[in-house]
Length: 583
View 1 (cartoon, rainbow, N blue to C red):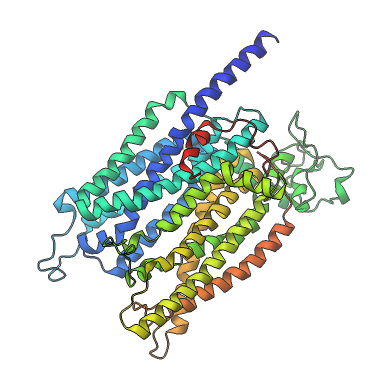
View 2: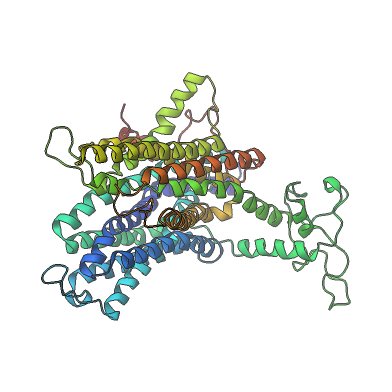
């Protein structure tokens, strides 16, 4: 081995050790943001109605705008990160933004002038919020949403950058472990948020609750800066997103070119040294964008332009990148329904009318904590899948390839439909018992099965979506993978609002209480759940069609685990965290 190759190998070894050790820090950055946003969101409507004296409708609109912004902005953040700033700088800047937003929200609970005076007596003679007070409130939520725009889509891709120089086989196995434990960490953050921090807000006051949130995000922001010199920082692909637009423009400009069958006898423009000289057969109309043409590209120039002019000819790589991005959109659209169904349960309102005691004890589960069954199921299943469940399934079936990514996504969608059917049956039973008995004595544990099913649906579908998009999309679009998920959540929230309003308009005419009534016993929530189950079943058929048509073409990693998936090393944090799974 020559000296240059030896030095390169040693440098890769050193980078590998540093990058691997810093992955938990990167994931912790997102965990801190998720803890803060989830804890604030859990009680935000109470804070707005009690401290700012806003009505329920006004508070709901503010929360809806905040959640929509936190879901849509990651798409912009992913583009800016991949094309301009780079993932490290994007994560760092948005962590600061989240810290500023959380600190401002904390100040609203500490400085009396930033909120209206308390009502005396309660709910009477309340003073409205001033424009300055509302401005500080909106600014705090805006900075927090802006913080989500970079932290959420970039942290996982930034963690992958730390091991990007590994050989493909080793990196593939590490990525599968990274995806699973990323979601375990997200689940952990949700558990901490809805239990510990919400308890602080309820029992110790808003000041203590928001101070703890601000301290958490500030601590991890400083930790991120402290370890910044040791990160592996990949340079942004400045021409990536512009290149995708160039393909569309070039395809339109070259629409008059004849494209022969099977691309035979045609020259295509490719980068020097590229192994991909001919574009794929799918979406062949885009292949015209990289065809070499010898006539002029612009009617304003009488001289022949260069064959490889970027104004009228793109590279094969650019064309294939756009094809990859477009090819996942049908699958993405089919999976939006999972987010809609996951967010359409009114379990908290149902639990508030039910017996929430555990057995014969005096302890009573808070209605807002009923979703802990979903979070716990999601977290435990995600953490145990690669280490325990998948090896068991392989031994039982005798096959190394047990479930494909598309099958796991389909299972997740199917389970969301089943959970809605179960929710409909439970609500019908609850409503019947209330009408018959007057005072309901039905245990809130009847709600647990639908939440467990929803947790399993997320563990199957959400993680598989990340792996699927990451395998298909170009590596330079890594931040866009998670942005797709958050964008799907934003679209689902809008769809859910439209469906809910439409249902109430249709079913609430003639003086009859609508299905989604303020009074659960007057409404027909069971029919609403049944409607969602039917819509989910229709979407499941659409998903099967999309999965059948989609042609699997990997970009970054193999789409499935191979036979040696357990034999080789995986990320060290996966082995160390295996103790979190029950034996």
